[in-house]
Length: 204
Image (cartoon, rainbow, N blue to C red; front, top):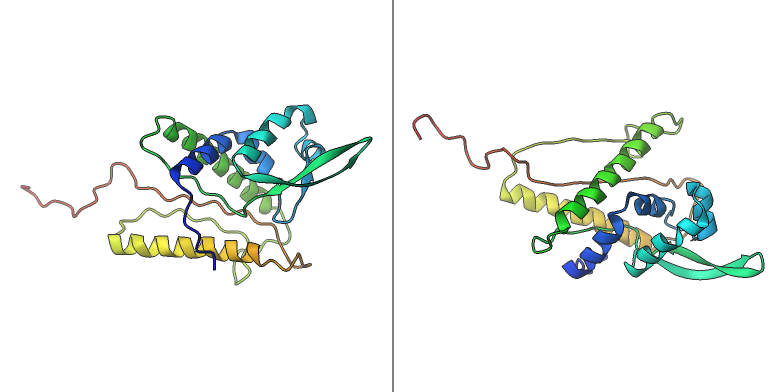
């Protein structure tokens, strides 16, 4: 089981800055768990000229989001090949960093726009399963009053999900014919304008 602690805020800041670009989110969405892609591969998948990608690739490399895994012939030269450094990524808000809020907003808004496109596109597929143990299409919006004990349990479940995915990535035996490439986007946030405590009685 993956019991590594969450990265310090400094590492989250570098990652947050890298992911504040919707296009860089689009780039990393091209990688599956086992995909190894070059700049020319990414240019073909995104419909962008390769020359426009090198800066974004360098930013993702410097943030430790992707890493170089080798090279291969491309015409008369060698081109670098990259893969995802981790199967999932989290970013944390740093209240001491005045740019943190806006960059997290950019990242989350872009991520959920991408998630919405993925979900809507999935509705036209013949292999979607909305129910059952192999359910692969699902959405949930929940607003609820949560006690400290329940919040602890929610975070325990979220952490268990992180560990499950990380453990599977570390011990992956290789792809099979039944595997799927799925998108999972989660946000947890306190709501504004909601009273945390009990509703006051008349005269209070």
